[in-house]
Length: 147
Length: 248
Image (tube, rainbow over the protein chains, first blue to last red):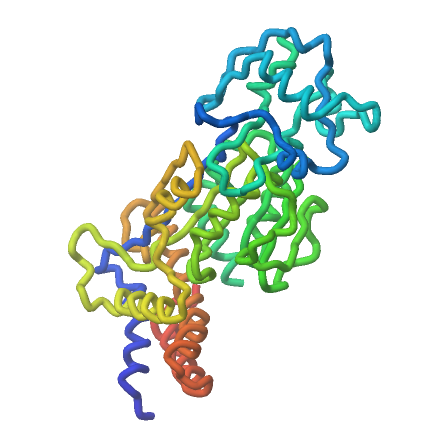
């Protein structure tokens, strides 16, 4: 059987892979990153606009309890999050999402006594490439019960 | 199947860790390019309260899977992933080398569909081998083969070698708190350390099993070798594997 150069070359590859005299290794990279919770841009306008509303997922509820609005926001735990002042949060929520009776059940965390805002429910800036986004998390939610 | 085997080897290399991102009770998880679904199935068992959506171009996934694992035939290169923006708590990709023309655009889309506060993670291997003690000759056949593969992949506009760029790409598209962990997997069982020796033995098997598929795909598409020509060559290679005593 006549062997071409390429055939011999490929046999050599297999043999080389198991050659213990060559101390070669593969590098395996694992990279992980977090999408920012809250905007760190001082110039960002956090007041929702009509375009924000258009991105709200149908059927989702963002409804703070009025009696909890005065509760002091707990200190932010996670790094890179910005604590939100209660007044600004109130303006934001009440202006963009008036309290509605329809579908007042909180679907995501039924054991939580206070309505929580799930990150998926947060309206977004219209552009996916917007450098900054305003959202709530467990740590920045000013209506979280501090017990 | 080699992909399942590779998944097992990577689990072994990472001490059984399925992810390195600090996940806290994730609810929506996406596995891009799931392949045989091995990782997604393990995640379904590890996080019974989460929904794991796993996409791939090829319908090669098993059917007897945990109820919270869904396989979807989809192309991650599509601009619209057909879910709401900010939908996933965690997006995972693993060994996508050569799958995409522009992996950075996949990361960018991943960013778009990750929830604020959620994580994305990618695991990739460098295609070319490394050596620290000078025992790898410049004309080492396996090294030359990886260079040929890189060249072929670049010709096909499906680059293989981008693992070292991941961190920069993650930062570029807007991720914060970006971490990079690099582990070394020996090409064969040359190390003295028992764990590394076993890992190398497994990895050599993985490479040998993949050699045929990788070469078939790229050599035929890019270098225009005929199927018969390739089959004849690899029939010969099959016997060479036996000669090497590698039928583990």
